[in-house]
Length: 347
Image (cartoon, rainbow, N blue to C red; front, side, top):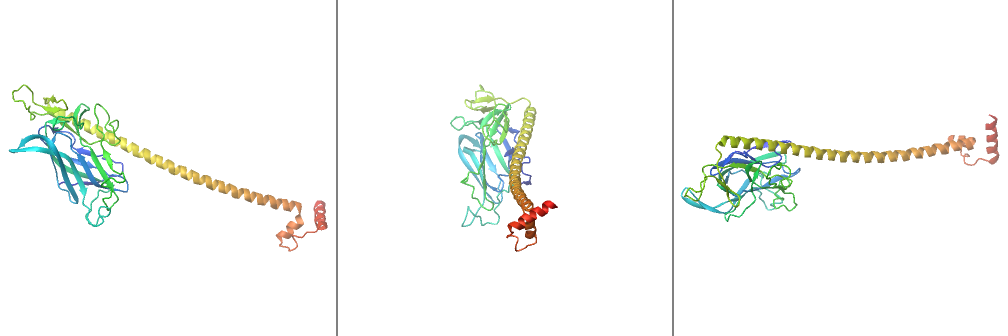
């Protein structure tokens, strides 16, 4: 398995879950892609990832990843023949969970190879897919909502749950503290991937195109070849120029990726600005308290100066005795006071 742990700054590109590549998947064929999982929450590690497989994907084979348990859950699908065998189940979700062992698990993990995804890293999870021809419906034909036409592209959505835990533990794998990041925003029409898609965090997606490999169940020739979309099934005939279809999907993917990255970077900078504003407000409040305290000290000093000057004017002799630490300074006789006043006036 190719494993990429990529260092990144908080808020840099790929701060959202993406499929890479997320275009160029032909109906009725095989497609290899990677699920890129970003940093989770500051101060936590990602220890569990649950990827919901959209209806129409017939098989999913995730490659083994050291330190992680990988599970593929299944659901009933319309049976098909593969290498002479009848296949009647397909993948419903893929789960990666960091291995955590010991008596205290999951609150403490004793194994030294516990590999929770650090907040400053990205994780790339490769998976090999077999893509079917019927999308957006279950085996009974009921609509499922995981296939839309978005930006004029037939789009499959891979809702993803990212669970985060205290470093060195798997304590967040049941989402007991409601820290789970839910990447579930599904778009249609021309809504921006990052906004207007029904959730704060956009779901990863794959653009898919119709091919001649999708043949109708009716062998009389009354129906054309092509993938079948939604309920009731709409047959999407293959485009004559497949390269043009894939090129357009690639351009849309790149534009939407850059737009969302820019939007997230702006949101982070705005949040940082608000944090700085709060810090500045706290500093201003502290400065105001210091100023009030200083003003109180100044007022007290002024009062002391006023009292001192008043004593000097009213009783110069007594004031002088205080300065000279005369023991009689506090027992000034009335006639001494009068003489002092007269003497001063004569001066």
